[in-house]
Amino acid sequence: MTESDDCTVSMRDMKRIAGDLNEFVVTFDQIFSRMAFGEAGPDLLVEYMLNRDVRARLAEARKVVFEVLERELGEEAADDIGESGFRYFG
Image 1 (tube, rainbow, N blue to C red):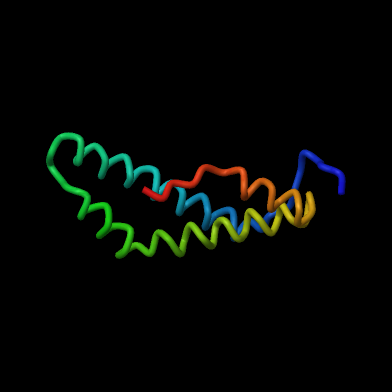
Image 2 (cartoon, rainbow, N blue to C red; image 1 turned 180 degrees about the vertical axis):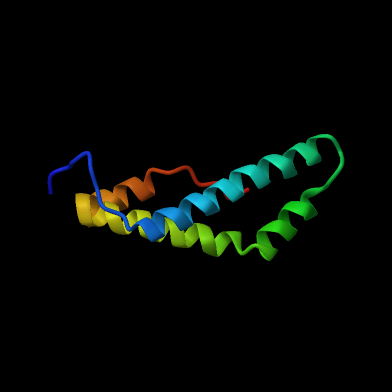
């Protein structure tokens, strides 16, 4: 496969992913700020992530992105990109 600078993603998917990412970034910033000032503990972060189904929504966004990468670059290249990311296991 040849790599191009353009790809196609449905506007429905882009709107959903953009809205989710914006929510996550803004909310994480607010929660971490409150934690830094001693106004909240890690339980607030856990509560948010569970109540707003953050894990599943991130997984769905990843699925959409990797479907496009596989279509455009091939499965092996998409797998390489996925495997190159940082993993934190605590």
